[in-house]
Image (cartoon, rainbow, N blue to C red):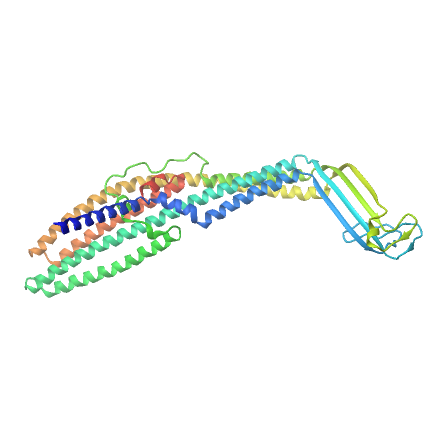
Length: 461
C-alpha cells in the first residue's frame, strides 16, 4: 500500500508539472512572439538608428542659425621682403611683405598672428525656417517608414507562423491516412491468409500504405523547412504548436471581428508618401529662398606681433616674434547675394516640384489600391468562412461514410478498390478543409496588414 501511494504521488506530481509546463508554453501566442521580434530583430534597430540620425540632422540644421565663430592662431618664421603690385587673393597665396623702411639685422623674421571672426546671418528671407521644416518632415518620414516596416514584419511573422501550423496539420492529416491504410493492410492480410480475399488485395493495400509513408516524409520536410524560416525571426524551438492548432483549425463558426477599417490616409504607406511629397515641396521652397540675399553681422579682432622693431632692426629669435604688438578690430553689416546661383536654384526648384507632384500621384494611386484590396479581401474572407462551414460538414459526412464502407469491406460486401476509392474521397475532403483553413488565415493576415490591426490574429494564434 505504501509503494502504491508513493507511485501515485509521483504520478500526480508529474501530471501537475506537465499540465503547468504545457500551460506556460501554450500562453506563447503571436503577441509573445512579436515581443521577441521587437527585442532582437536587427531590421527594427536599423530603422530606429535612421530615426535617431534624422533627429540629429534636425539639430544640425537648427545650428545654422547660430553665428559662425572662427579662431586663427599662427606663428611663422621666414623672409619679409615683399614686392610692389596688386593681386587677387586666391587660396594658396600668402603675404610676406615687410615694412617699407630700411631694415638691418637678420634676413629672417618671426611673426605671430591671431584673430577671431564672427559671421552671423541675421536675415535670410525665411530660408533657415524652411530648412528646419524640411528636416522635421524628414524625421517624420523616417518614423513613418519604420511603422510601415513593422506592419510588413508583423505580416511576415504571422505568415511564417501560420505556415508552420499548416505544415503541422498536413503532417497530422497524412498521419491519419497512414494509420487508415495500415489498418486496411492488416485487414487485407488477415482476410488473404484466411482465403477470403485474393492476395492481390494485400499487395494493393501495401502499395497504398508505402505511398502514404513517402508522403509523410515529404510533409515532415516541408514542415521543418517552414520552422527554419520562422526561426529567423524567433526561437521556434520553445513554441508549443499544439496549443495553437485547435484555434487554427476552425471547427465551428468564426468568433470575433478580425480587423477594423482604418480612417483614410492612416496607413503608414500613405502617410509616408504624403510626407515625402511635403519634403520635396519644402526643399523647393528652400531653393527659391536661396535666390534671395542674406544679411549678416560681421565682426573681428586681430592681434599681431613681429620681430622687426620700429627702428627697423630685425631679430631672428623666436621669442622676439611676440614683441612689437599691435591689435585691430572690425565690425559691420554685410550683404551676400549669389546672382548666378539664383538661376540654378530656379531650375532645381522646378525639378523638386515635379518630384512632389509625382509622389502626390503615387499617393492617390496607393489610396485607390488600398481601398480596392481591402474591399476584395473582406469579400473573400466572408465567402471563405462560408466555404469552411460547408467543408467541415462535408468532412464529417465523408468520415461517417468511410466507417460504414470499412465495415462493409470487412463483411465482404464491397471490394478493396471501392474501399480505397472511398478513402481517397475522405482524404480529399480533409485536405480541402485544410487548404481552406490555411487560405482563410492568409486572408486574415492580408486584411490585418491593410488595416494595420493585427489584434485578432496575434491574440488568437
